Length: 288
Image 1 (cartoon, one colour):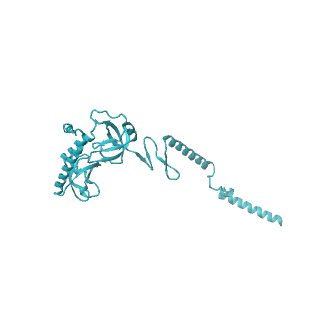
Image 2 (cartoon, one colour):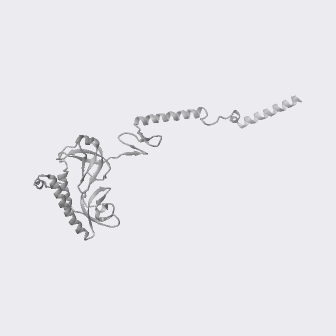
């Protein structure tokens, strides 16, 4: 959304004074809208995030202790994070009616474009993609910050994330992003998307490394590399082959050996018994 505010801004020598004045005007307009909405049992709030087709709305007047929720079937068209909406509540935190308030939304956007303007469409994005964590987001201001040590070393500060990039995201999410500088030379995140880590068992595979290997005392150990996994599989095969060889060539460890008499067949034991009996009778006659 592009707005024409520059002629008004340049009437002030200090842009920060302009922002402060406009915020005061916005609060007055919001108060008037909330008063009018309350007369009909409705509320006015700001969309804090949109996730899974559901919009979450911040509004302290509802006294819910959590954000109100606008389901997919009631979402106003082109609704974005940071938009101002008027809504009615049904059961619990579910919204039964919602409408975007364009005038208040555009007022917020004008303030955003002066306080933390987006990069120009012609501005080149960084060739490098970074990975960081969303450390904060202020829906009423329309921006937040991404914390990333590597980009901070290059640009000297955390990276701004504007409301148009804050879709299906929450504070604390790990994200991939590129950086573009705005007219104030502020680093702004572009192409922001949630990082997808592959979880295997109790470990997490990240950037080609295997799962975290648990140490003997139950604590997480070092990540197992692909080379380590190959060596482990090779050792496992060798051990299996050795055990198979012992089973084929002799008794297994821990299993007692059979005596010769136990290993003979029943017929062989009967013949041996008859032979022993004849031998005893012969010795008896000889003694007589």
